[in-house]
Length: 435
Image (cartoon, rainbow, N blue to C red; front, side, top):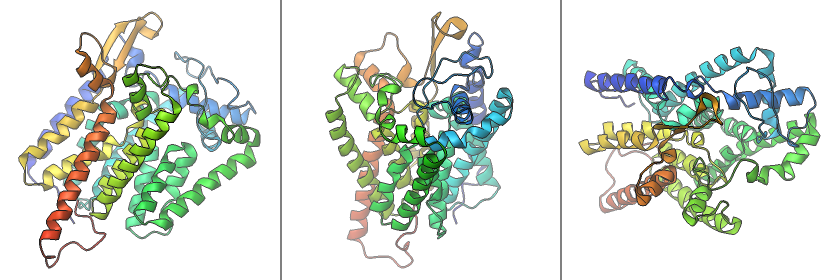
């Protein structure tokens, strides 16, 4: 098994960065904007609560907007955009008082963030010693200042749970567990997008993993059809295809291929045919490179790239959907620690800089605190040259493009290098992870 560098310098540096990250999370936005603070919102988890309440009260899930008087915060009416199974899963959120529910959800999310980091190190075959624990804690705290994770915590989103379910399946497959795939199937039942990973598993020859996941997903569909048949039929017969229930394609918050296409074309809604063609190209390229990485032994990198590609081709991807930057950050630290080039240590801070929760506030009487706060590099405005602004507003798709191209180059060069030299005694066996 691998071990992280034992030098105290690395852990001290990471600890200082973790403290700086916490300072950024707790102090930005500033004291003028408490609603935008890390514990000032929890809108999405309350929407989950409303969905569960709708099920318990026999209120239609998809025929209009849901609302509730739960915690007295500033909440508009919101649509319920998740599959029927998720509403059933969220019904227990109504068993406790709203503020207690929010506190428990926050605690669960923080634990899951740390767990995701630890699972990544386990997937990379690192020894579960004291150094790994310390580095994992620091990286988990650092990820809190990354916009996808910060927004996930702020909104009370479910994305980190889905990430952990998929990582759990990956680790179960590596351990030869026959039930591997159930987690991703449940994740797809909660939020459809993880179903995209079935393509990655099929392309990498893991048919059993894909089949178990599909069966688990179909089980969630069946549960919805049995318990709330009206809502389930309405959802599966059309509601799931209506991306306009979420917002315009061109919204800066839409960090997907479709959003980038709309912004670059200067239109509010990207033509469906153009997006389908582009999505097919992106899916083929992303999954193809992911499969190459997996076959070269970079299994976690392949899974991470597949997850990022999933987010790219989704019709609407909010910034908080990009929680796949968590395993990507772990991978950059891993490659920097395992590599011989010191320049590799520039990659983790570059990734953080592109995905950090940079903030900018503007007076706006239509929002709580009479201010609107832009969070994330893609939301920043002002006197910025158009070319640079175009890069900033599409930063997450650009990160996907850089990672895809870099992975393809590195894997291709590695294959050519191995082809030019005889197979060394003791080289990694096929299927092992040389990450």
